[in-house]
Image (tube, rainbow, N blue to C red; front, side):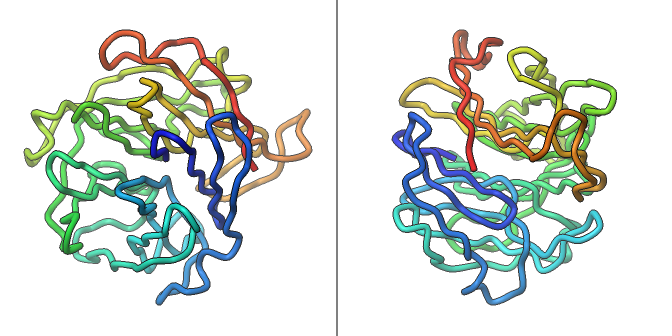
Amino acid sequence: ATNGTHYFVSSSTALFMYDLEGNLLHRNDNPFDALPLPANHFGDIGYFEGQLYTGVEWFDAGRGQDIQIVLYDAETLDYSRSVPWNEDSGQVECSAITIDVDNELVWMSDWVNSNYVYKYDLHNGEYVGKLHLRATPEWTQGLAFYKGDLFITADDGDADRKEPDNLWFVPKETLLNNATYIGLEKAFDVPPFLDHGEIEGLDFNTATNQMIVHANRGMRIVLGMPQGYYPGYTKEIHELHVFNIIDGNDASSTADGIYESE
């Protein structure tokens, strides 16, 4: 996530704040301690009016439990408050969260079943409904809005087969429908990515007209769980890829910079 002057990054269990040059400024290694429900996993995160919006859950064997919308102060990274998800919605995991300013909604994605994205009222946290995505992206990982349109990163490429993950697009005119058709916006090819791996979240810096994409490489992931390193790696590498947006909503195919995070 970004507020225009900083990057905010989540690992599975920690929060980090960087400047735009990639220097680590602050971190919270124990973000779940104050939560009302047990948790062991962050999805992609979002920023709105001084708060980090995060999707938090207890994740195990490819499924989430006790999903919460959790807010943290963006300056201190300290816990602010949490809102439980609506279990009757059908959502069983939270891989990403983002703020829809135009419609005053919070949207959440489900990595287990990516048929739908789920919407909550931005102000009172009440569940509003869900949007059916056709065709369904596989393994949704990130959500972010740019000029009112919704962009989705999906871990739909098989790293074992050297397949790229992808960026998908939902036009703003269809967001409040019951269902919408999505389109392919961009494949995350190698290069500019350094290797095939696992795409994570994304955000847009409207102040610099850039798209920021979080991606991992080096670790083999099966059903969301680590299964050892790929040949040539002794650790998992986490990176922010920064793309210049050069034509409307289309992101440049050449990375402006790559920043390695914790």
